Length: 199
Image (tube, rainbow, N blue to C red):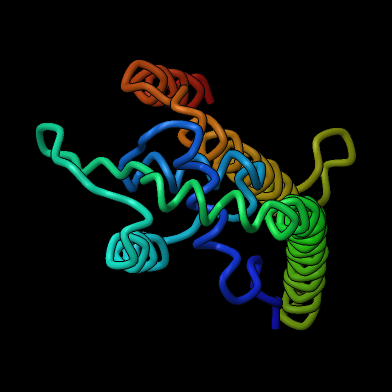
């Protein structure tokens, strides 16, 4: 089981430190945390909003409405509480760096394991197809110049899986940093349609 990113009480202190930079609404806080973790940890709204409500109950933050958004700002009491916990905050920054490294390692390990499993599954499927063909008396024709159609399909699936994984990671990073736009998504769709049509 993956240990929690923040120890007890650390997230609320970290939220105060983010709000000390400037007021933010909840989604901006979620994005800011995601950026600090390089996209490896993005807290849910269910994690952030209860802590903001508790900070508000303790008069450490205030909230105001800006159109349809609720903006949170640190109070003087919040700044005092933050200043009194300066050494704890420095420790949290160090812990966050360690957590980012740990999460990145886990993501890499998970992807590598998934790719190994996929390769093993594809090799097993190819072996089963050859065995079935032998048992039924059919010959398995392999075009040495181009490979069998099954092998080509398998290779294409591996390429697509790797592309999809890398693209999803890139899109999440761009979304967190606010760089993902409607034009980017439309361009992606157009280009993928063009690739599909050219096959």
